[in-house]
Length: 318
Image 1 (tube, rainbow, N blue to C red):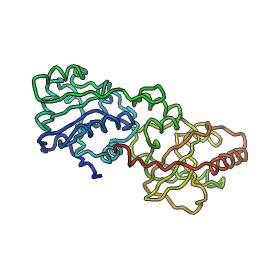
Image 2: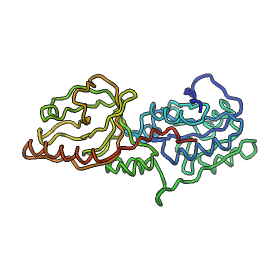
Image 3: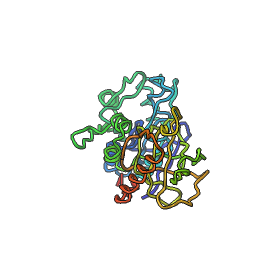
Image 4: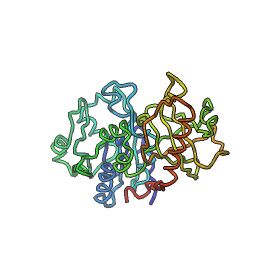
């Protein structure tokens, strides 16, 4: 399976005959993956293209500076590129682009990529003030040789899989359900920076994560079972997201990870990923540091009895 070529919509690349779809694809969840699989199956010998946006369209349309996303744009592109797609094209979405009419937007896509098939999600909207949808597209292109298709909602456990629903689950810390909807572990990534050493003083040294993408959604405050990934190596770990209330009355949010059985592991300055598998408990303010140490030992004992998954997502779009 080849890797998709990542391009910008503004590049001078033009495609002769394609099958394409478009959307934000935040999280690139199993509903998105279903749409892409369907596009691949129908494409025949056409070039397969996914058009997406950066930043997320709602950040501009709703004028939300701190609009949180499930995945960074770069990670989303990496996920999509594992599919059997020829091109992943990014539109730089800004206020000016948001004012394009649905007609002008579609004309622009046709001019650049000459689609023979356009597939969109059941709830997709495009063009100024969201005037375009499947019905609009079908009507506008009815006199052309372009086939317009719509992907049905993807339902799991009687729920329609949507990025907004997954974000709500992440905020609630329901990581197991999040992972089932994503089709892979939820991930945070960044650089390990020095902390204040509270964990090391307790006998449980931690790696403090500085996120690459400050707009990425962070799960609710609490303790989680995770895999810490650095390079090609994975380490079973326990992660605390919170404000360290046992030590401070008020502190900034931190993401601290203790790697089991690796006390001499040096991670400062390294790029790491955290794959989340389960929520274990809320963050607790202990009256005594010894009580915190006892609780951490119990958390680790529970984790040692669990074998974390190893789904790296390479089969998503096959």
